[in-house]
Every structure is written in structure tokens, then in C-alpha cells.
Length: 234
Image (tube, rainbow, N blue to C red):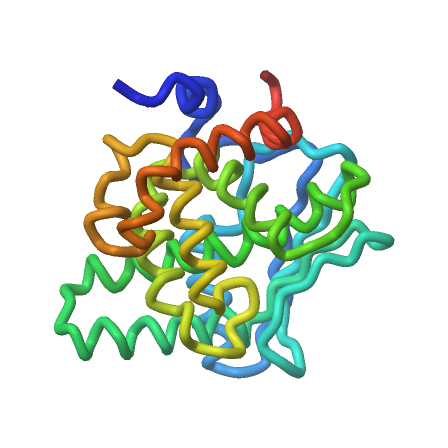
């Protein structure tokens, strides 16, 4: 049976493509190169920039060409920007890993889609942090990201933990780099339902010695900020 606290999250879930949060608008600017066009297509077709999370204020999400590979949350403008260059960089790294491992096409595609979802949910976490008047930090953004990903796309949770683990050692992939940050993110996802998400522990994406404490870690985060990361209409 799912952990009792995950029941609330699961009761709020929907598949990707369901009605988005009424406070969120998403737009895709014209790409300036074939590589950027591929990134735009990946972002749009993956549904990675969609959410049903209730937001404290309207938020605009813009996917666009940039002069660097980055993603940003601008509090004053209430805008999340996802750069095509960052999506492309994450895709190329994961494609290279999948080719080296001789992973099948389905596995590679799932990793990329999940990585794009994590990129977006990290920035959504930044938005939820500042819109709720909390001190801004990447750690807080990741805590929100774990809860919102669980609510929005439970079917991507395992692939998200794997993709972030694979990208953790690659610098320059904003929102996904850092082994310690990756392990904490994986621990929160695993702790939400160790039975359902046991592959996260089996894959070693959360350190074995830490896995037993992940339920408690998830419970603390859910207790502290869970009411700020729920689906619209609940």
C-alpha cells in the first residue's frame, strides 16, 4: 500500500495533457536554428512545461532562444524562462549516455522527457518559493519540485530520478547538476512511496545508507510546504 501521506498527493494527480493550472500560461518563441527547433519540439511534445499546480499568482512560462544554456525565474515579472539551449544540452548529454549504454529508444526518450520535466519543476519550485514569501534557495526549489512532480506526473518519477542522477556530474546543466542535490531529490521521490518507486533505491540513485530515512525526509517536507504545492481545484 502507498505511504499514507502519498495518498493525498496521488489523489491530486492527473496525466500530462490535462487542464493546466488556470494561473499558468505557456508560450514557445520562434527558434533561431535547427537545433533550437528540435529543442522546442521536444519541450512542446513532452508536455514538460505543463502543470496543474495551484499558484498564488499568475505565472508566464516562456520557452525561447537565449545566449546561454539556462532556466530562470524572475519574481518581479512572474516569468519562468526555459532556454532552448539548456533543453538541447540536457538532451545531447542523455542521448550520449543512452548510446554508450546501448539503451533502447524508449528508455532514452523517457530519460529526456523526464529531465525536461525536472528542469521545469525546479523553476516552478523557485516560483512557489518566492510567491509564498519564503527565502529563495535551490534546495527549497528542489523540495517543491519533488512534490509538484509527484502530483503532476507520477509516471515520470522513476525516470526523473534516473535522468537527474545521470546528469548530476555534468556541470552547466542548470537545475540538474550536483550529486548531493540529485541524491536529495531522489530520496524525496522515493520516500513518497518506497514500494511504488523502489527502482529509485534499486538503481542506486539514492545512496543505500540513506534510503531508510527517505520516508521521514519526505514526511518533513510534505508537512512543511505540502499545502503550497497542491493541484488546482482541490
